[in-house]
Length: 90
Image 1: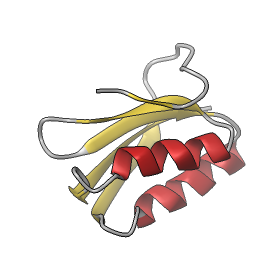
Image 2: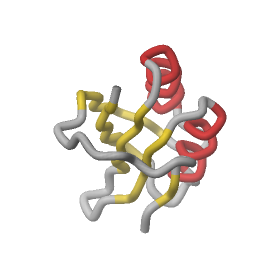
Image 3: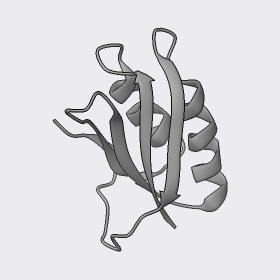
Image 4: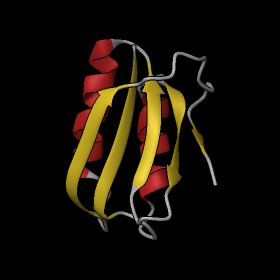
């Protein structure tokens, strides 16, 4: 199962991408995360549904210095193989 996510709020410059990658790797998920020019953080994650739901909960909470105002979470339109281990894109 592949999911696309976009995180809104104060999520750039606070270690959010590193946090997301660490959490995804701990759950054994494939995928990527990056900062977008509009101030959001987005990415894709692939793996078992239970691991994806755990990641969703962690992304909604975020690291200590982030403020997450909204998390968009939807099935990915792209059906390609995602990088494993989960990576940070620039």
